[in-house]
Structure formats: C-alpha cells, structure tokens
Image 1 (tube, rainbow, N blue to C red):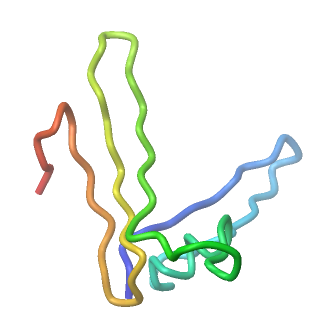
Image 2 (image 1 turned 180 degrees about the horizontal axis):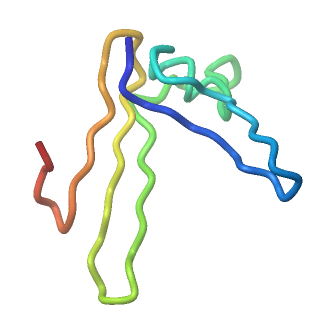
Length: 78
C-alpha cells in the first residue's frame, strides 16, 4: 500500500486519478512507463527547482511495497 496520490484537476471541476493512494508505487510508474521495451527502472524521480533555488525531489520506488519519499536540497523529510 503506497502513500502516493496522483491526480489531475480539470477546468470543468472534475478530477482524474491515474493513481490513487493505496495502489502500489510500481503501478504508478507503469501508468507512464512500461518495462516491456527496456530495462526496468528502479525508481521514478520528480524534481522541482523553486524560484528561491531549492530543489524538491520526489522519489517513487518501482516496487509494489515501497513508499514514495520527499527531500528538499538533499535532506530527507520525515
């Protein structure tokens, strides 16, 4: 059971959930990428640099039992 929730709010007020909290992190990655054509990934990394220069990193393991994690400037959040 993952701690990851991915959703897309739409201009009409509706919301699309390609991945709901509780689904495995591996399934979240499979939504965007399939390992059928290349070597399987070990994780998906989403990195955002803020206007102040801080780097926020979300790491999503390619694992059915793993949990996503977040760090800011390399420092892991609890």
